Image (cartoon, rainbow, N blue to C red; front, side, top):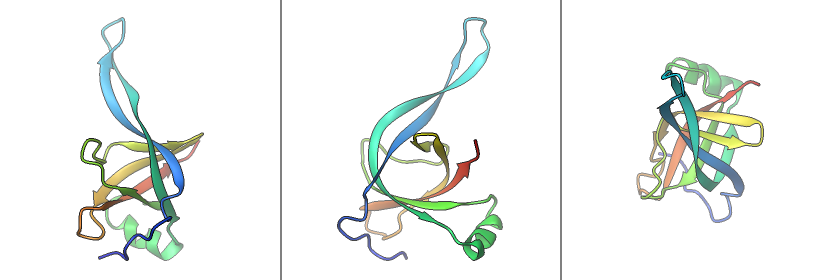
Length: 112
């Protein structure tokens, strides 16, 4: 279980996006990203030891991003957070406090 999220910790505003598969004019499949809107988050970069452990879980996790749970806008793996040119792909999501108030997203920052 993670430590409780304190008041004022969710200060970084990121845009939550979900992938949508659609067809182009030629009938080919393309993926576009729909913005769900801004969310207040806390971003924690993972240290080298944490990244090594996370790599054994199936991917290189670079950051933990905490968000407040929103029933109408659930965060799921396969979505992403965007901050300017920075893109964080969500690999896994779990309830860190086991209270349902916040979700912890394990993400990988894409290199541009």
